[in-house]
Image (cartoon, rainbow, N blue to C red):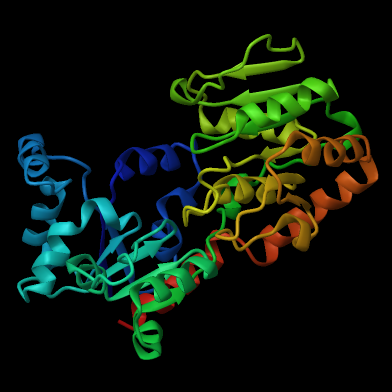
Length: 360
């Protein structure tokens, strides 16, 4: 039996509770649900915060989540592996202790954002490189990010083979059963754009200002687009919306839009991936900004269009042609669903993660 302690930089306690109550899918827990369906795995979630004072002390020393890391250290004898899906913010102390030889438990991290920035020309790699290499395995959700990190760290092929691997994240099948009834394109009457991270809402508003097709935007108070004279056919919702309700709006939409800001598209993050998985799970076409750090390309995969440009002139003709091509949209939706069923789902992700853990 492999006993795994799952630690995270935001509350997995709440997400697990939502999963139990049927309010959110299991893949938001990055493998816990599917691993525990397999023989030989037990995954415990470390409670998010127990001693707030420790976190305040940690911030003074520039060590975030000191509370979590000290509790992890004290619990180390109870577990075989420490698993950190968002490692940069809540494993710094653990990697320092590992580097010093004090903490010996394997740490597995996920790579879905830039993990390391190389030194300027003429300068040497610092302690951050050594600390990053304390992770026993990093499972990258992006093949391009794996390559980038390998080059940035200037590591040899043996280290890459021994410590880096690629994983295909995917949505949880059972959660979407009964929530994924297909709605034909001709019966839907709006497009949708949602996201909390680096969405170019301003671009998509200007595109739809000229198209005059209904558009629904779901954002946060911090990401409300700064526009004047919002057309009546475009609505913006910055209030909290439960995932299950947003999923229903996705299902009823004609297509899903994922415009990513120009200034962040090359930041080494898998921006847009979560919504792509949503779209495939419910069989919806996607139009998105090209992001080389997302392995799934809607154009190449046949369930949407990938646009290189951040200009209205590039997006407008694509959407004008696609929005009223019902046959094409319905075909794209079917292709999205088949990819979910066959390649990008949480069971397959869990199998890959299990193989990684077994080989430690």
